[in-house]
Figure 1 (cartoon, rainbow, N blue to C red):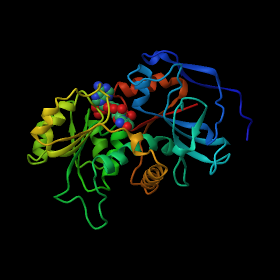
Figure 2 (figure 1 turned 180 degrees about the vertical axis):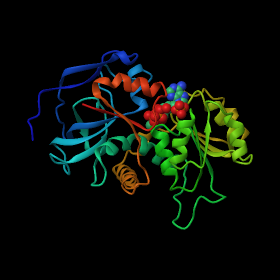
Figure 3 (figure 1 turned 90 degrees about the vertical axis):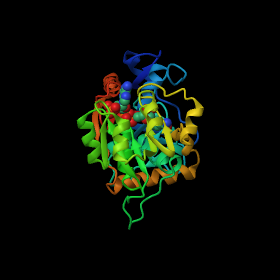
Figure 4 (figure 1 turned 135 degrees about the vertical axis):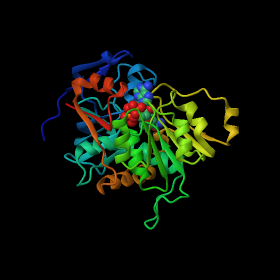
Length: 336
Ligand code: NDP
């Protein structure tokens, strides 16, 4: 294996702002390993909406910052049991927008044979969000092999259903007891959501979502809503949620949702949640259970992540602009 250099290329944020603050540098010190960490040479780096929040300052972090929450690559040094040089891994961590990242092994998986490195880099953050929220926040149940999503299955709505997280939600929900409605911002995006398995789709750039949901569900409303859009959709969620429904607001693509008048929840005994992925994968057991289940879904072809584009790392600003400009479907990756 080639010797590890002292410095590396990567993207540094020295002040919060627009995409212009994502600065390409070639002399960033390669991180020093601590006990229990591995050094990964990143092959593909996942782009997530959260990266834009750290860039703008909506979510706070000390500056200067190398942002980026996930990647897949090869172990080049290890101070942790179970991982050795040359292993193919994917991880959730910090500072992924660079050639090398030091990662605590608590959030690392070996990439199994049968899963390519693009799928591995694309899978974890958005897929584990979808899987943990489906299982723990919404408490939906896997279909038994004999049953399909019958008449009595709950109505489940996913906003931004053609996005990175939304696409994995829709594909995973195919395996759960649920009748799935996807919303998206164009006919092309609605088609992707439908191809991924949504039973019904609504183009919210044109259609009145609340009345369409009423029509689709025969007046029942949605038993579960997964909303990563936030500000633009939150009010309609409160209108179209079913009696005793669970409204899971988990993102801010259009700006943060709320504030909400708590008395509004009483009208339909609504359960309102604002979950964060990392609180569902705190223990080793949780990490192993959810990551292995997700990788199985990918390996068996039940989840197949559409890669929107692999951008050169130097063009990360274009990737952020495309994501924030609603020009993308599926997953954006970066490559050095
Ligand atoms: P996406 O790939 O879903 O991209 C965002 C999508 O949101 C766009 O494609 C667009 O789809 C939709 N959107 C609606 N309104 C706007 C707007 N005003 N500006 C921009 N986009 C808009 O991104 P991700 O999958 O990375 O993330 C989706 C959401 O999930 C984010 O809010 C993110 O923060 C959240 N998230 C939360 C987690 C948690 O732990 N709580 C973990 C992971 C993700 P369309 O054109 O179809 O409307």
